[in-house]
Amino acid sequence: MCCGRGRLGRGTSGLHSAPVVPGIARLATLTFEYVGKTRLVVVGPATGRQYRFDRPGSRLEVDPRDSTAVAAIPLLRKISLSAPGR
Image 1 (cartoon, rainbow, N blue to C red):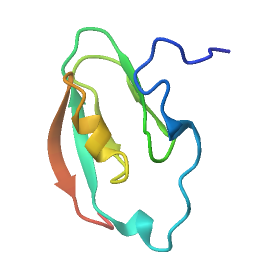
Image 2 (tube, rainbow, N blue to C red):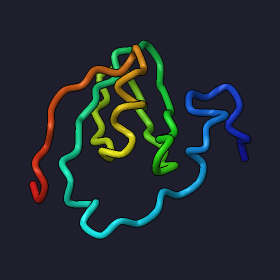
Image 3 (tube, rainbow, N blue to C red):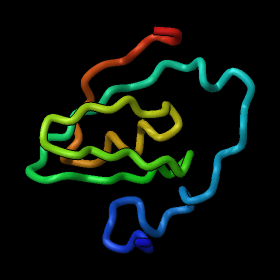
Image 4 (tube, one colour):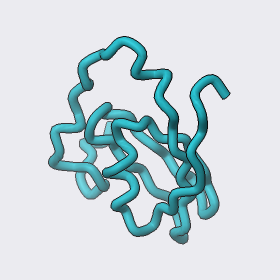
């Protein structure tokens, strides 16, 4: 089992779960595309969720609570905003 060293997001308080807020899952999500050359794992600082971009061009929906931090990573490009319930 890996301790998480050397990964983005290490050293943040994101390893703890964010408090549950009624209706938070209904917020719009952002889709990000990985533009690096290998793979990348990002730990969301607000939710503690691991976002695994397995190869160049991988796209994932990111929880709105993590989206600001994920958007700050140079190898990730914001693609779209998804409406709730879609």
